[in-house]
Image 1 (cartoon, rainbow, N blue to C red):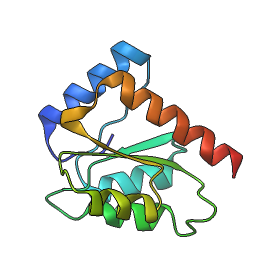
Image 2: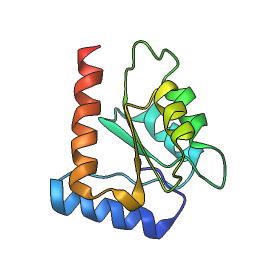
Image 3: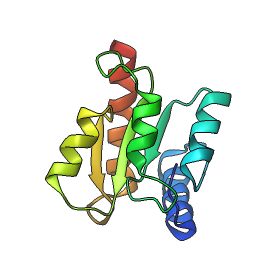
Amino acid sequence: LVDDDPETLDTWAKGLEECCHYKVLKVDTVKSALDLCRDQKMDCVVLDLDMDDASGFEVLLSLVPDRKHRQIAIVVLTRLISPVLHNMAVEYGAQACLVKQRTSPKLLDQAIQTAIASTQAD
């Protein structure tokens, strides 16, 4: 889970752990996210686009260099309500883009499961 807001990180991590029994690793910077993904195999990255240190798009472009053969599941979870940004996120490698204010842990779980399944099919 990548988000630069500690409260948001804790809220979503707790929701996913309690609701869906995920083991959630939390990082609050783009650099930390990229380092973690290089060091460990991740089933899915849940990523905020609006980060203080850089854009979440930087993570997308680094983790998904070949958008036709996505090797890692990525779900964008953002507060930004913009169809253009959401379309760009999917175009740049995310399997889904959800709005925090309109998403529950159960809906996020469904997006994560779909994203993981789509990377396994590639």
